[in-house]
Length: 206
Length: 206
Image (tube, rainbow over all chains, first blue to last red; front, side, top):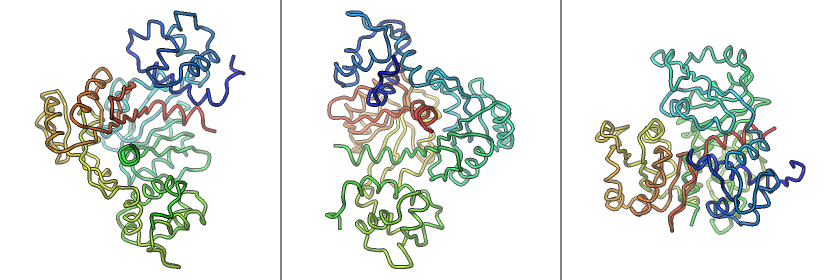
């Protein structure tokens, strides 16, 4: 069916997926209709129905989709059925929250290791995930074929960590340090600025 | 000058602001040219020059702008010179990271209080900011005229906290719980989904 997916549909699929992923485990075991999804997200009923029909053949009249199947069908189109290891540099509160969080798995990401330079943190274990010294970053990433990194180190250290990640073969970096990182060649950096998100919401809405 | 600002310029101003805000304190005390900003952000020189000229009259040939003045001029246009109190519900690692972070101030936000239901956390103090019991949320927000809230509670509790924030007079909610929140009437909710951001970066780039 993939050949019929328009770019507009493609842009909405992540929204459907994240809604389905956010449902309780009980609801994930049941069925869900396009109408229910449209209502929950405040979207047009007909559009949602068409979008879902273009990625999944599982819809039944009056019954809807088996929720888990629909998630899996959408996820496959979006590439979420890949399994990619992810490392996190910086084990402050923010980095620890990343290691404790299990929600990345639905999107095909396994947080495999945290890194820090503080000897009090190195060697510990958070949510079953080891914390190693930052000096092991390069060797770990190369040995485990890691291409995705999250940066939660202090601002002053972020560019250096970014450069080291690039050196280690990482190609995608999500940066939470409040500093603009220059992307090394061949690396895509997404600078996540929470202050700015809050400002856009509270100053530029309504 | 504000009357000359186009919507395109307006959409780029937050990018300039967050770049300036991310500079070291030393560099914030100096001057900066439109060319330097354009280079750092990979943007068109002429466009940046025009954008800045439309919001600030402080630019001097060969000298550029006084960095602090330029930030303040851009911030004024964006409304970042307002001062708004913000509360954070949920004092797990993520919520504690919010209280520890001082970078919201440049955008006009003061994190004034954290809330939790865990008695081990209530009564403590993080980065000079008190942690109160969640049952005090409504009275605190009303007494202190708080209109902005950040949700970092577990998924199962997020909608209830969202509804209570709305009840308490909060009008803007930034939600980090991995669950889609239904916005109560009159409230703008931004659902921040870190897994999805990572997926869009690593699956849909390059």
